[in-house]
Amino acid sequence: MEKVWATVNGILIADDPETFVTRRIKEVNLEFGGIRGDRHFGITSKADSRQPMYPRGTEILNRRQITIVSEEELDRIAEELKVELVLPEWLGANLFIKGFPDLTKLTMGSRILFPSGAGLICMGENMPCTLPGDEIQKHYEDHERLSFRFVRAGYKRRGIVCAVERPGKIHENDEVQILVNDFTNPMQ
Image (cartoon, rainbow, N blue to C red):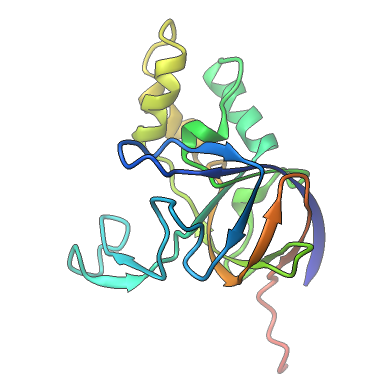
């Protein structure tokens, strides 16, 4: 596995039941299930449009416990949208990292390890939708159609979803090790 390093620039929580928008916190204790109090906390969740192979509402494994975005990818989204900046809060992110510019391309099964021993496993790309675009639009009323333009601008830049593989405390400014899954079979 290739090893890459990045820095946690922000930890965020979506603890207001009225919105997916997150707010910043300095540290958090990751649990199996994610961040207690966050809208996506839980070991299981209900199937929705992202899992069309199951009837809606079916209890399934929660692959979306933690959402991570990178500063570099948000900068590219803002550039494409021709806006000053796109904040991780507006996308409902839980972690905001710097130093891994192609985060969204991180392969499933890759690990993100924290100094405390906490670990996340990448469960795949977080597909862009119009809800974050609606939030971005609120901050740039003079720009047209940001809700829909975000879907295209966010494609392959929207970040990843993860599950907690090992609980532990994480802090703003933690240096994290990313173990990139290269899909090779160690038995060969």
